[in-house]
Amino acid sequence: MTHLETPFMTDLAGPINWNRRLTRFRFHIRTAQGLQVDHIVIHGRDQDDARRKLGQMYY
Image 1 (cartoon, rainbow, N blue to C red):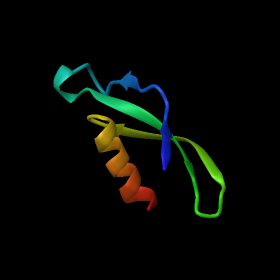
Image 2: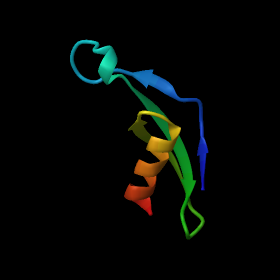
Image 3: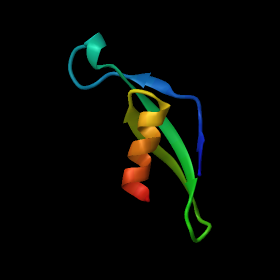
């Protein structure tokens, strides 16, 4: 379904609050028509959370 690249860290807007730190995951997906969609970036607590959000938005 997706190919996950190396995740990178980001902070939410405002000062750093370590309790609110999320990871952004970058996905590449292929549509049902065979087109590749690159550079989809989704915030998540972990990889499974990001994949769940991807599924809610695009499937």
